[in-house]
Image (cartoon, rainbow, N blue to C red; front, side, top):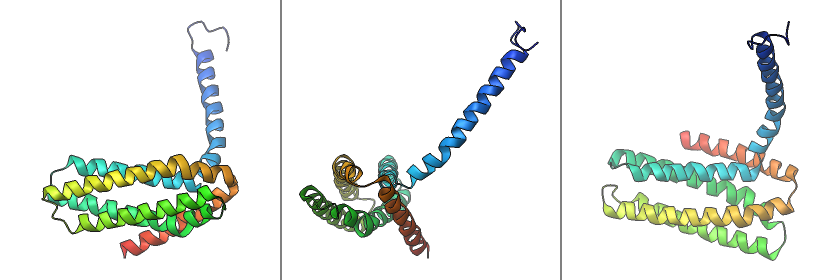
Length: 188
């Protein structure tokens, strides 16, 4: 009965259900791995980079001063939180790789963070209705994009090549926990 139905009835249905069950089992087996990877330090930091990139895009699309100010404030909060966890947790771990490249990359990243903080300050005191505001935002965006490019293409591979998966996961947990604390502080 199951294999003889030329119309594709029960046989096809059983094949579809069996495939779905097998697929579900495969997905269920992969979920812990995906969840663990989501807490890896480099994954969390890349996710932050993408979120800020999206906020910059949204800011450039609007002409409403109220919305501009709101999106800019979110960019500032995200960048301040991100830089704090990098400076407190990730950069010291990279510096502990004890190579000249690691030391130089951390030093350059810290300098870039300071430049970004300075640009954030200048933009935050600039009238959102002015041409100067969007000019400062574009300068900030370029500085962030440069920093992200170097971090993702130089520092992250250095960390991944010199740290174990367990070390990166442990750093990710520390970053996650610190970000929760910082979000609570911002919300208060």
